[in-house]
Image (cartoon, rainbow, N blue to C red; front, side, top):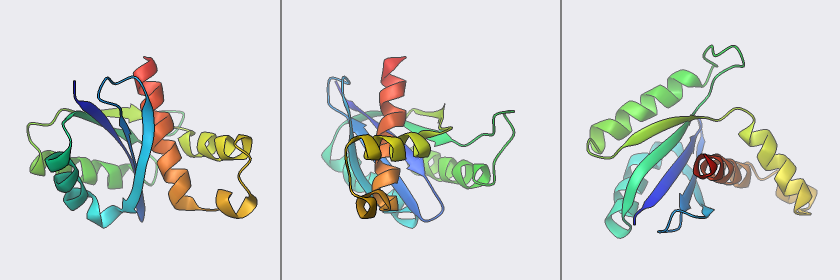
Length: 135
C-alpha cells in the first residue's frame, strides 16, 4: 500500500504528516516554508509512494470562509496543476492548531518548545491525518 500525505497549509509555514505504508499510523514528517511546497512534494513523491493527499480547509463554525481559506484554495490549485493524477481531498481543520498546542502541553514540552510554531504546524497536520484515518 502507499502512504497518505497530510498538509496543514499556512501563509508562512506548512506542516506535513504521512501515514505508514499500511495507513495505520500518522506521523509528523516536517514543516516547510509554504513557498517550497511544490518542490518538496516533487522530491517526496520521487522517493515514496503516495496514494492520496489530504489538505486542511479552514472554515468558520458557520461554514463560512476564514481569512486563510483563499490561500489554501490557491495551494490546492497549484497541487492539482503539478500533480493532476494525485487524488486530493479537503478535510476540516478547525481547532487542529489548538489541539496541537494542548498535545504539546500534555507531552510535557517546555514553554520554549511549545512556542515553536513549526512544531505546532507539524503536529496539527498529524492530528488532521490521524482523525482522517479514524473515519
